Image (cartoon, rainbow over all chains, first blue to last red; front, side, top):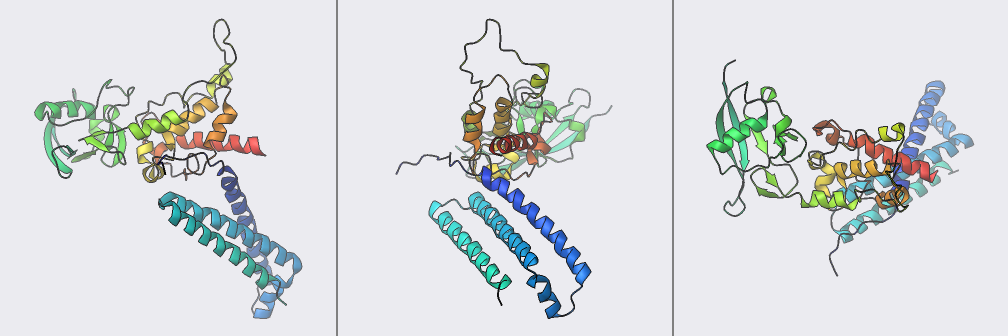
Length: 115
Length: 237
């Protein structure tokens, strides 16, 4: 195969914007959870569970976790793009990162909506 | 004013003769009246040891030839005040580029990236009889961009450029890309933005801002890169 430098993948901007958007979501959620914790001041596990048993809270927590995993996926992908030169190794690492972040999202659903 | 003796540690390497680079010590009498800039002292050193190699031309910060790493920070020898330098003065070639000899580096990769952004006006409409005019406000936007002398101080201080010099355009190239994106006489704005929408070409910039720190002309490539991203946002949403 000819060794030519390849550029022009036509993506990157969307991810850059999403990384900023997800950061904003996380900042808002972090503020909200601090306020709630200050008000409720849960001292037992049941009180703690109570906060997240609230449907709206479960929904917001899920949005936060999706933002977190999406943000992490873009950030970790950037690290691989910066430092890993071998295309095969990079692809493998990208797939592994994607698998882990998708898996975590599924796990988050299971935790938030379990009976 | 009295003369003072300045110690130097200078990177020496001739790939044809040396197995490995070495740091050579020099000592030079500096006259505070005639030896104002580091380049003046380097010219004096060159008279002492004519095997010492460095690039120089205009000696007034316009040609960008004498960019080098001075006491750990990239800069132009001709704009660096000798009186501000701590002894021993450690001089190395610009980091990250192949060394041709001593303080002279191979700038091919740097200029390849510069050429890749098409650093010229693209306008297919027939030119008017006299010239393409701009309003003073439109012209204002080019200030802080057109002054770039392509000395490579910024790009060679950028870690993202060190890791991916073949794919990341680098701060100098991106500042110049914005110079043409911002030019109201240029008609290829959308193509230019398309070309930069690439995980490597533009988005290896992680706003480390070494480029802003070292630019001998006081320019701000990070700001220009931010404006490119802002234009992409305005185009997309």
